[in-house]
Length: 251
Figure 1 (cartoon, rainbow, N blue to C red):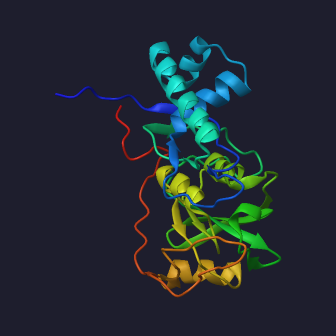
Figure 2: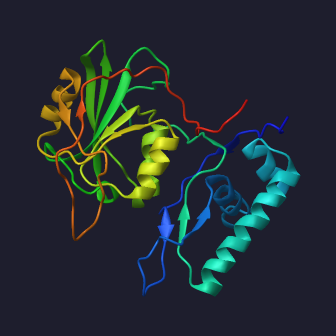
């Protein structure tokens, strides 16, 4: 019987979810740095932790940290030496992003209600996730909005914004365009994405509650070309208890 791998706790998100050489945007043959490998670099190299401290933070053995760190360093080296692209995604991880104090209440995921966020700009759905300066956050229970508030993100880059949502215990996000790395991170953290939506934020939320929100499941984010076509209709919102844990975690 194969050995069960323990979830690695992640408390920090990358500023970006991918890097490419200046003369190329090809990500087809990109190296994959997992979130747990990234966390070892963040803690050991950026924060100055010892391997023992890193192991304690991530909830794993020191030998596991050593193995992940060596793998991460090799991938970063190959990226630089070979001129390869690199994406940050995947891994056997559990996101434990520190809570945001800017949200309207100290809600915990798994409560009876759900929390929905919308990229926001002057009443409209902001179309570039990675550059949004505000989210409008709605707390919903039994199909009714209990509270709503516009919150400043105070962050830069896709990773900071994804971490902002994770720390705010958000269950679902409505947005315009969003990059693939951010999509993967939100999916692995249990946040449902409804992308490719435009118009008034409040109207989109009402459509969501009515089960008729039109969104694009294949939404992409590009400064030059946005494919915001009609997509799935959100006709069934069975939002049960969620958690910030990737699909391969084992207790």
